[in-house]
Image 1 (cartoon, rainbow, N blue to C red):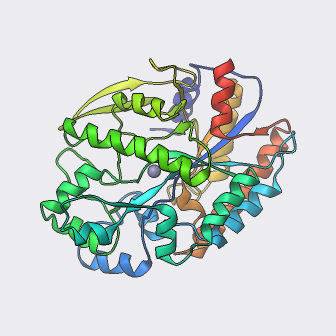
Image 2 (image 1 turned 120 degrees about the vertical axis):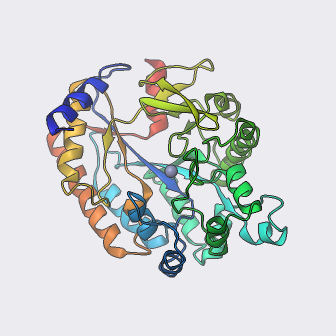
Amino acid sequence: MSKRIKKIIRNLSNIPGWKTKRKLLIIESDDWGSVRMPNLGVLKDLKAKGLDLESGDSFRYNNNDTLAGTKDFEMLFEVLNKHKDINGNSAIITAVSVVANPDFEKIKANDFREYYFETFDKTLDRYGYPEAFNCWKEGIDKKLFIPQFHAREHLNVPFWMRALQNNDSHARTAFEYGMWGFNNIHKYGCYYQSAFDLEFFEDLKAQAETITSGLHLFEKLFGYKATFFVPPNGPFNNSLEELAFKGGIKFISASKIQEEPFGEGKTKKRFHYIGQKNRFKQIYLTRNCIFEPGSKQRTDWVDACLSDIEIAFNWNKPAVISSHRVNYIGQLNPLNRETSLKSLDELLRKVKSKWPEVEFISSHELGELVNIR
Ligand SMILES: [Zn+2]
């Protein structure tokens, strides 16, 4: 698709839904709390064993994405803190987070018959950086980093457990290394990472349970209820919205065109726009800007994102930026973090100079504004 056509589509997609004259900027960053690549030794071993860890966009995830350590937080907070909006508020990240990871030891001890998880603060202990959890609390206190809900774990539990029980060799090999985020092959295109894709319709029940318990754990870990929910990777059966609603979710992020799964490869297209309400009066929030400076797919991320923001503001829309955790992690590859933070710093500086009236807010604050209309 040519650049011009892309720009026209981006303009058109910004037309429907809630409007505001305010220049609101929201940064949504997915995946916090999840294990992806435990360390580079694991990457090397699994590659040698023939697992696909590097095709497409998975390359940058499996080479860079892992649990955030103190240094990651310190450096990110420094950049966010540096940029204040017209109200004196710092730039803020809505950290779309999971609250648990599989308890590999227990699952194995039980011969893969049952699934067990550990809350992610326990995973941090296991990885040897328990102090990182204090950074989460610091980010919340200083209004730099506000966790919201991605899923209980970034994992399709029923689908993955079946693969392990059926002795799927790649799933079992990755399991031995404490990971599941490789490109698995599946006839309906289900990925272990896609927590709410449906291999079979019957899996909905188990998925529903992960939402209820995940939201409960979220409150226990952070001391407040999550109100904003971003289902991982997109696939999500909308009947799960009811339990999310019962668990306190008021705002849901959806793609403008959602593929709702029904199991065995069946899907239906659903269209969403910002401010749209479902039958539980939950409000959909949609993203309209992309900032993935760690990705090699572009070299001009700052300019490209500025152009997305400009289109959003021209249509009187908030600028809702998607920017995954992987960009800001330097545990595996410090250069990845350094380059991304430099770009983020530049982006925020340019935004402020172009739109001095810009306001930095989090996703749940945006949801509340949309709600009062
Ligand atoms: Zn995710």
